[in-house]
Image (cartoon, rainbow, N blue to C red; front, top):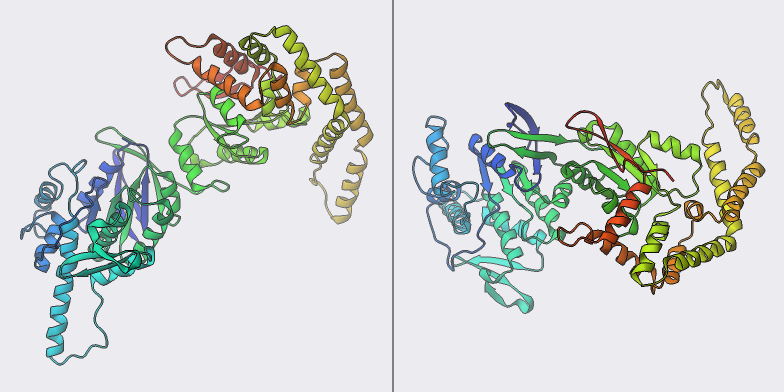
Length: 562
């Protein structure tokens, strides 16, 4: 059910209307304290903390309905411990803080499983008593009314069909394989927490606000979303606030409003409402907002050589792999042009591939830069890495480098025709992309203009230009030029074996380990430091707007574009 509450932000209070809210943020950002603040200001709220005990007594304690509800809501039974507009609300909050939260609402271990179970039993008994009274009074209802316990078991069955739960003789029983019955305390942590959370939600006040801290804890990811979907459906009269640092859980609540809690200084909260951004999965949006670093989109996956290398070269950036160059370009443009990311700085780095210089220059305007080599795998083949690896294997670095150059040019000669065609094709694709219908008034003018534009593209000239570029690189034995224009996945492995490594993986691992060792406080690797310095010199400079001075600071200041 939609409700409106005020949420403190800075010195103000912002009013939000919602069915469900997700507070997400890093540890220590003040999420839980914000939940406590909302609990204190909302008369019909019920909060479940992240610190919760999952054990209960062998036999459920039977209480009156009133006493059970007081223990469930406030942690004790007192005529004053309820929300009544005619009473002193401050006194009521203090009662709840003292009894339910042990005067430590931020860190107290909530041990109320028994109270929840007593609430279910008390409601069951009250309903049975009323039904009997009505029946004896002549009323003949068509069916027995559904109790809170019935609703709990209904939700449970929809989420955990493999495990049947029965409550009888004031005890909780579960049925396992072979229909063997055992006490509910023998269920797994995940099963007990699911039962606990369902019961908490079903017992919450009518049209109330349920605040749940770390709703995903102890639950397998495969049932988290299904559980809370079922709970929300059963308690459609309620509103929900989830507090989490789990980005996957936050993203799974697709119908909820997302609040990114950025920080809390002891008095004031800083948070932002997270809007949906086209082209971005919600979990990626949250990851970017939470990184607190400039963002660098790269090709590849989390464990690909692209990501591993760029995490070291651009250590001041939050690296986000986006698989393809197209996704890198789209993501960078989206992040730089939308207000949904609240000022996050974004860049992209993609393989040079066969891109023409005008294309490279156009991409840089959008914050997308190209590598100094044709593809990420060629990074491992750079001369200073080859020389360092040769020294590591106690081989003559000059002889090894000469051998690597010979092997590399041999592979290029073998695939030369295909490389020329690919480069010429890329030039033609770029040329075709320059066509514009601006100023064209009708269909005929459009067709004529397109045909004339296409006829002006000289495919033969593009081919000859590409062939000339490769001929110049081969004629001058320009090894850096080869790495810049030769797209060949097998080159890295051939270079690794020429150096003396069994395969490219061993060479990669050695390079990465040496770079990592260069960052150690004690006895840092000089070899790794040199390779990292050279890589940062070779790769594109990414300008970061300085938050301190408002000027532009640059990563890899001495870098060239190769």
